[in-house]
Image (tube, rainbow, N blue to C red):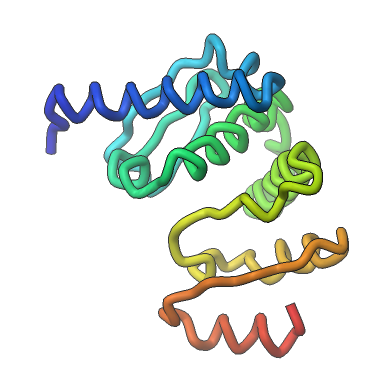
Length: 165
């Protein structure tokens, strides 16, 4: 299904506005994003980078608040800056991706200092099979965890609760 031009302009405006807000509020990320190209990819479920551009699913981008979009932009630009797309080819890809996400998200949380509570990502967190491992790493930092779920994965929720995460 082709995306109409007015929607493309709406998505471009949202991404450029978020990039400018990051330039003002978190200049490190804003400067990294300054020359980054954005793309829409209807085959993608969320967002990704190929090391050169950041691509979004149109549905995912539309579902995000500006604050959530800024977080995803920071997340993806750090993957580019740390050259994650060029590294780790000799490793188990799933484990490597989890490790890279932990590094990226830890850096973002650290950059927010005491304001980490304002980071919130929409969607169902329990859909990610690696969530318990990620929550363990977050717990080790001493940060508090609040998990909002719609209950779609009761077995995974029971697992997270039984581990005290």
